Structure formats: structure tokens, C-alpha cells
Amino acid sequence: EQFDAGELTNFLNEYFTPMTAIIFQHGGTLDKYMGDAIMAFFGAPGDMEDHADKGMIAALEMVDCLHALNERWWARGLPGIDIGIGLNSGPMRVGNMGSTQRMDYTVLGDNVNLGSRLEGINKQYGTRVIVSEETVNRSSGRVFFRELDAVRVKGKLAPVRIFEVVGQGERPELEAAWIDAYEAGLEAYRTQQWDKALAHFEQVLDLRDDDLASRVFLERARSLKSNPPGDDWDGVFTMTSK
Image 1 (tube, rainbow, N blue to C red):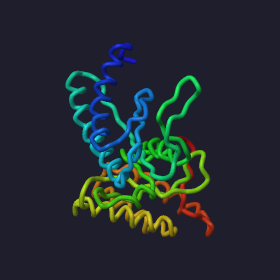
Image 2: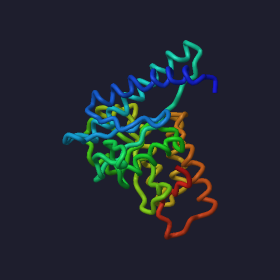
Image 3: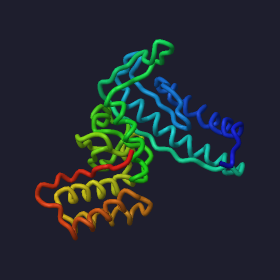
């Protein structure tokens, strides 16, 4: 609300320009700008065998770019911004779609919708880049992950395992310690070993005290320890918002 329309336009242009350049640099196709959001896809119109890797690397570079932009804006007395990025892979309809009056080259389908849902749930875990298991399975090792959760996103019944893209290249030893502790906590949580899960998530916070995802699981595990879910519990968390 501190911007008039012209100032907001300049601010968004300053944000969109480098972000779009990163997408293009990795062979992505810009679909559209939606308010302050960017929609892009990889693997069309031309075939791209490593489209999952390129999408994830572009996402990490966009997060790095955001840090530089925020520093610049803060120095000018402007607000910084935060972003979440969601990626999913799978079959979808790609082509010119719209109306008899106007068409756009775009993508449609359930797999597109899931990518959008993954973007939105970054806020739940304090993460920046969330991808589906299908995207992880298409990775060739150019990035490393942690498994974050298994969720039912709003509007879908089938659960999906989700992962945070943590960084590029081989996983450094410094990152391995907290990721291994988190994933051990996740496994204990799913097998209803509440005390073990609590210990692992506390260990993560000793190593990385800003990890919101571990705090989320600590709260869940404490609640479920007091009110056990029963033998038919599948460990999946159902999202109630987009």
C-alpha cells in the first residue's frame, strides 16, 4: 500500500526482469505473470531430457537472486519480499489454449495444479522450494534434497511425498547432519515412535534453530503422543488451504 500504481509497476519490473532471465537461461518457457507471481515450465516446446534438473536449478538461482534484490531494496528504504516456488513433473496438456478470440501457449492438467499447490505450502514449512516425489525421481544428482512430509494437498485425495530442494551439487557434510536428523525424525514420526521423533527434531533445531519444519513436527508429534492416532493412521497430513 506504500506504492502508487507507477511505483508498483517499476518495483515489479525490477523483480521480474532478473527472475525471467534465470528461467530463460535454463531453457524454461515463460507462461505468464499473475500479479506478483511467475508461471513457467520446462520441457516444451522443445524436448528437454533434464527438464526437472533445469527447473530446480533455476529455482535455487532465483532464491539467490532474491537475496541480492532484497539487499538493494532495503538500502533504498523499500520493502523486501519473500517467495515460494513449487515444481511438479508429469504428463500435461501443452499448446495453444483459450477462446476463439484469443489463445495463449500454456499448460493444463492435474500435474500443473499440483505444482501450484506445492508453491503455496512453502509457507507451512518455512521453505522456499518444494518439489514432488516425481520431480525428485527425475533428478540426476545436480541438486540435493530433504524429504519434507507426505501431504494431501487441498482439492486432491491421493497423498504425495514432498521434498525441499536444499542446494546444488553434492550434499556438504555440514548440511548432511541436520538433513539426516530430520529424515530420521520423519521416519520415527511415521512409525508412531513419538519420543524418538521428538529427540530427532530437537537435534535438528540444535543444528539449525531457524528450521520451521522441525518446529511444525515437534508440535504435531507432541499432540499425537497425547492423542494417539491409531493403527490405521497413514502419517499423511491433510492441507486445508492452498
